[in-house]
Length: 274
Image 1 (cartoon, rainbow, N blue to C red):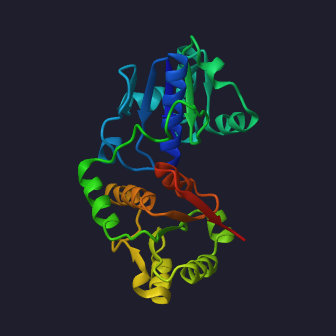
Image 2: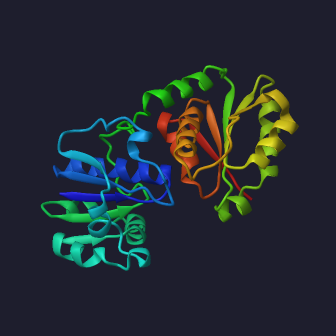
């Protein structure tokens, strides 16, 4: 069995889950996914997605109180108490920083997972399979899908997605300033006079700037860009899937959200950076 703890925000967790499912299928291994509500994503899985469309040997569960002391990532916050339990329960454990490093080194996750009890905490797409379409196991819950459909119905064949990441992502703030998006939007309008744009952002200031500059060419959510509540995370999911219904995405540097939104439907993602 593989035990996976997906880490980070929405896009990071989707990547980790999707790759773990691909790995479990290719190795014929059971997979247990434990979903934790935390500062990175303060929301239950079933408040975002329908039950995963997967085989019976793959299960996802919400973390219980006991899980927090046995399967959570060992760190200062929990006094590293899960570590001795994990050393007893698993043949090997890989935590998120090491998982990312091994991914870049071309580590053989298939060989590592075969015929063993292993633990993995990850925030990246650490394993890809040619036999699996990216993110095909995920489906938003009905109420969120209805809102995605409502927003997407306003699009035309020239609607372009824009994702501007701000808040705590210093790299995105520094490398993908708002003026780059304004320049690119002007270029797109020059290419096609019918171009319009769906803006997804966690910055109310950027919403105001782009709507003031481009008027009704900009479509965006009227809801506040808050990501630390259930409603905020549901809005983040709605925006991700709405972006996926555009023709291409202009995204922010060092944000997996831009890339994941594009991968959902296989459209182009252009990262704007200095």
